[in-house]
Image (cartoon, rainbow, N blue to C red):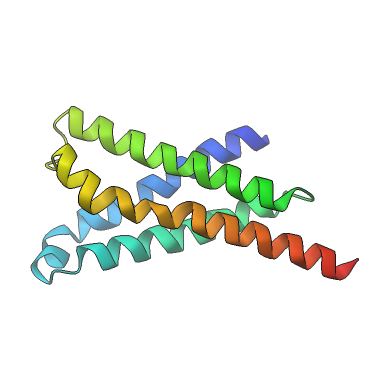
Length: 127
């Protein structure tokens, strides 16, 4: 799979997996008032896993790659969520989405950029 296909496919999975987790556990986590915690954890774990898979094929420009995938994955998540809201599939309003869900996605570029910095340092230390 080429690099661009990986970025898009992994980005879709970074959106899909946490979305499925929160839908499946929806009533349980809503009743316990832990939606944001479960969502953030699902996003973080998914981003870490797919960042690992992505960085396995990268040999240089780690910081640039980390920032790039973080921004693209962030955009994918927001666009897909907004599509679901506009289609009426999601029960969130755009206002509630902007206040409670969208801020959780800041974790995506934070993780990917951090991993890019780590990989860059690791390679520099090896040389």
